[in-house]
Image 1 (cartoon, rainbow, N blue to C red):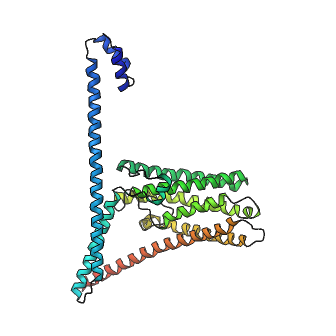
Image 2: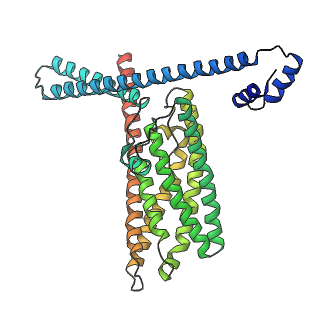
Image 3: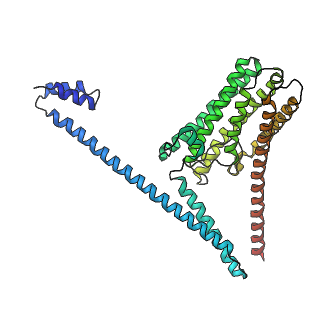
Length: 367
């Protein structure tokens, strides 16, 4: 009985099973080894065909949902334009119009929630960096990638903190170069990862996303700043700034993780919401104690801009990086402080309106 070719075939399907089958063949030489191998191969082919069918059905369902989503958005836009052109006189008609506008807004928000679970276009930035590859992940992969993103931020922030402390204690250009390279690599990688998360439903938008692009440019400019008198005058201040920002980011990560976990448990947060370097409305409960430190960091950015601007006016200053860095720090200060202040203003305004409504209801109830 020739078992060697069959055993080699079985070994290709199941590495590690050659010795077991050989022993069994000695004990039971009448076994149909070809039938055993065929049954395993047939089961694999069946599972593979089922996988391909389900993959095709998923792609078709995604295309149908995207088509229906575009149609609903188009119709909603048409209805909104028609309503805005209406000239109404009676209060009842105005009330009906307001109710329709509220329903349209609710529908728009619902469509946005649906769109988060459907494939997105990569956007210009990812198109340039990664090309037209499909970056839409399955649900389990989305959450795994989000967790990896959070761990990446924590680990690299700790490395930046340690490196900045080394630069404060030891004045070596090599240490400075390592810190600057780490900052460029960190923020550049952060922008790519955040763009991938945005494709998969994470709601990091507006200034806080633009903030990382600007910070990447700022870190890239400082890394090409040549060593000299002006650099030496600003070096220690910048290193203290990086150290303080790293501590703030570490605090934000630690407390935002707990806040997001609590909000997700209460159903008040999206599963793909991530920690950010700023302040948003959902952080109001439990994270408002960080606001003084955030405002101090923003004032530190303004102080950096002020220092660099005056350094650029010195006759010894020949580097273009000085004035450009001053402008970038000032832009970061304006964007951070205005965005955070607007969030606080809207939050306080909303709470004031709620108190007025509750007070009016209680007063009417008493009457």
